Length: 457
Ligand code: BES
Ligand code: MN
Ligand code: MN
Image (cartoon, rainbow, N blue to C red):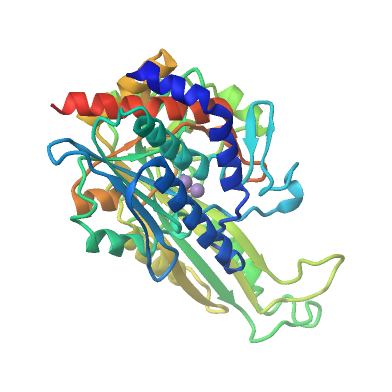
């Protein structure tokens, strides 16, 4: 069967690539209301592509936010069902001046497709649409498939939980297949088996009731930016541990044995430092970089602002300072609980000279996915076939909160078979996705379907 699929893919290579470029031209930035029409246009485009690939019951499911594209091909009740999840929305492209080509005018350079969303996640979603088309057109879809492609992943999937709860029957499946993660390298395939959770906070620190002259008042009146900086600095101790009381209480202790297993995945600290042009890494003492970004939680300021930031100097003692602070969580830490601990602590450490407001913007739980399941074995075999190497299981530091929800609400586990690279600059300027990776995905997905069906018998 696979030679037939492969010939189909080869014969349609240029079209598969050009169609993705068309999809990348629509700026589906979910965070910015300015792009509302484009996000909706992208949902329509995904819907049309699913229809022409051969899906049934394709519809835009309305939510209070952006629609979820649903489609399916049910061939028999007695066959297993794969639910494919992905997202058609993308991160904002800012800062625009750092892009070497415009983010929504895709170009192919040195084997990479440069565009916002090329890897995260339009490129990886579109691999599934094209793999499905290839299976349909060659009469080789071996089992049932359902697609659920959402448009609010990059803003926290606020409406997806309700959608899942309200559509449990429709979404019933034996496995969720997601391509929204990375492999270690193009010659080192890997399958993601863990993701971190997230608690994302915004804080507002208010000093005096209005901006003041920094000469007339400076020295006596608390400067909220200074205070905010001190407060943030105190959130970690000298060993890089987060100081919020109770923060580590539920952190899963990964055994020495499992850590030794993880350490087998190839990693070069020197290459890591060189690639990022950093003199050293910085984190909790006693852990390696791959551990710090997967099995340990992290706290990072994502943005900080206040006062005068324009050209030249303005002497001002500002009234307000703000920061956006994210905490990446590990399995068993609960994002609501951590948000509450953060809020309580942040208010407690504020000096009397300022007022503090804390808002939780979004959150989600981490996950670990099984390596002893039929679905994992199928993904492993499929990647082994296409990469000629057995993929390594690795935990990743990013978050896809819906994975934990799928498990909780639908009682179905996910396989995170992504094809990106950590160096693809997702969420950054010059996001790119390898043409190699795009087609590897299109070739590997039908094999996953084949092995999953065979192994489920
Ligand atoms: N695809 C990413 C998550 C990801 C990236 C997982 C790389 C593993 C490796 C996803 O689109 C994403 O960016 N998620 C957000 C969380 C969300 C709640 C905004 C994240 O991780 O910041
Ligand atoms: Mn993504
Ligand atoms: Mn993302």
